[in-house]
Length: 355
Image: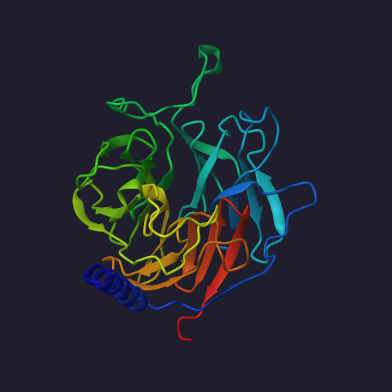
C-alpha cells in the first residue's frame, strides 16, 4: 500500500511540475514551401533565414549513387512567400551529408557538412568565399569516422563530423565540432585559427556530442550538449559560465515518432525529455532561447538564464507535430521555422502566447 502511495505521489509531483510550464498556443502554416516538380526534400537537417526573410533549407535530398553512399546534401533557397528560387552549390565538392545551415549578419550562407568534415561560406550570390576543414581523400581509401576509446586527439584546423556555426558581434567564428572531437573551435573574422576548447566527458566544459551552437548579444556561446542533456554557456574565450538543464517531465502517455514504448522503458540520452537537439536565440533587446528535443518532441522557450517560460508540440506526422526537429530558425519571438528529419519538411510556426 505504501509503495502504491509513493508511486502516486511521484506521479502527482511530475504532473504539477509539467503543469507549471505553460503550453504556448500556435499555428503551423500549411504547405508553406513550394518545391518544383523535380525536387524533393529528404531528411531536412537545417533551416535559416536571411535579412530579406528568404528561407534556406539544407536537406539530405538527392538520390544519386548506391544506397548507403549517395551524396545526401542539397541547399535550397525560397522566397518569403515560400516560392522556390534556386539550388545553391549544385555538384559542390563538399557535399556529402548535410547537417545545418546558418546565415550571418551580412547574409552570407554557411553550410555545415557532417559527412565531409567541412564548413562552407557562400556569399549572398551563392559563390564559395571561405572553406574550413578538408574531407578525406578518396585516393587514400576514405572511410567515415568512428568513435574510439580513448578519443582521437583533435587537430587544429581540422574537423570530424562538425555540427553548427555561430558568430559574435566582432565577427569571430565559433564551430561546434561535435560528433567525434567534442569541442568548440574559434576563428577570427578573417578565418584565422584562434583556439579550441572542450573534450569528451560530462564535466563542465566537456561535451558528449556538441550538436548545436548559438550566441547572444553579449557574445556568450550556447552549446547544445545533447547526450549530456544540457546546454552549456561560455564566454567568447571558452570560459564556462553555466549549464542549462531543461527539467520538464514528459507528459503522461507521450509517444515517440518511431513507436510507442511502455512507460518506464529506458531510452538513450538523445531520446530523453529535454535533450537539446537544436538551439536558437531570438534577436532584439529581449532575447529568448529556443531548444527542441526528439522525445517527447517539444520546443522549449527559455530566458537566457535557462528558465523555461513556455513549451509547445509533440511527436507525430500531422501539422503542429514533429519528427526530430534538427534545427530551429527564430527570426522573432513568435515566428519559428523548424527543420524535421523524420517528416522530411520545414514547418513555419506562428506562436500566440497572449492566448
